[in-house]
Length: 143
Image 1: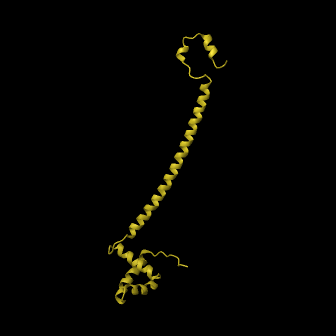
Image 2: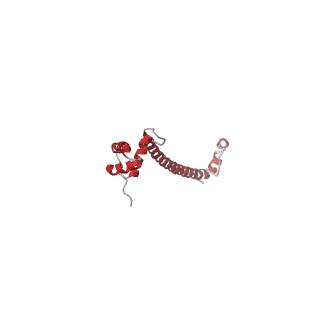
Image 3: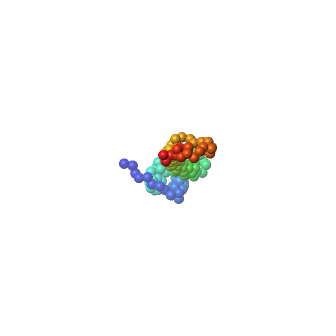
């Protein structure tokens, strides 16, 4: 089983890297210096080597992505994820409300058809203005 991952604060990282750089003179290779310093710091040699490599990237000694850039990328990825979730919610809501509006319009249209069909279609009100009253009474829907 692997050891649980430990987060080292920046001061501990800085101190460990500084100790490794100072001990480098006393050892034949960088790796042997790392192996001697790692137990004193409380981490594995691989972790200490990674701290040293990241320190070099952060100080522009070698190419790579700095810690600040990594944090910014993580923040942007979180924001993108949240925005995608919000967009999905808005799309679902708009589809729901559009469907509800369509159903409401269909109900109104059906209600309108029922009321207008009792007259038997379209009625030309201008033509009724000169009709005798008895014609109007026979055309009324109450009969």
